[in-house]
Image (tube, rainbow, N blue to C red; front, side):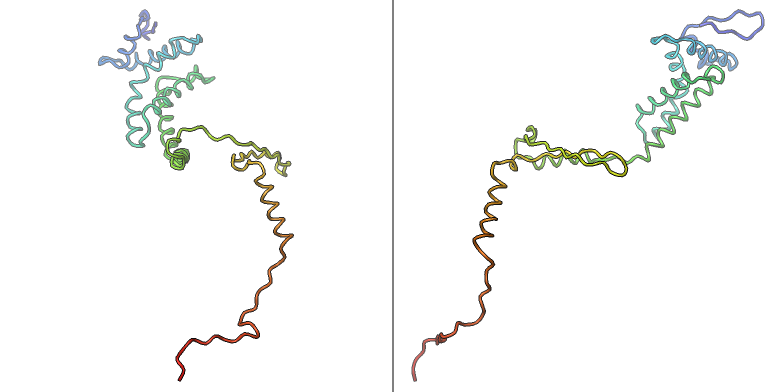
Length: 228
């Protein structure tokens, strides 16, 4: 990469990737020359339209030293996952490079600022999300209710029933899908129940309530005892 020195009459300086990193973060780094390096790095990345070009990768590699402390602070204060925060910072760098006005407004400081802002925003948004254990509870309930040795057994076959509902005032309604258990599909189960109920209702009328008290014409039984 060729970087202009900014000095009148001086020739541009050719730098390798390692020398570029040293110019930005080395002990003898010059702030004015560092700005020129960032400008040339961004120009190279924006002009590199190849799908596997190294221009954008160079930008990410050079930005990581300035984002490492930010990622550490975000993960420590907001208890965010480090891999997720690092992924968000890289995504922010790529989004800034893909912006339509990146060539006119983008610089090294604005690029780093955008990545830091996205990292903090991502971690704060994660604090408002409540984890749900519903899926884990369903799996545990199935494991507890399954017979011994059949926790991993395949689901029983049944009959899939689909009910198409009419359209409602708010628009289309999704159909209902039900699954009937195998024991409900036995032949004659509901028919036998209906026949028994029908026979009982036709053969027997309503039972009359038997009057309470002793029957007419009977004598009470006295306990046996000795005569005087």
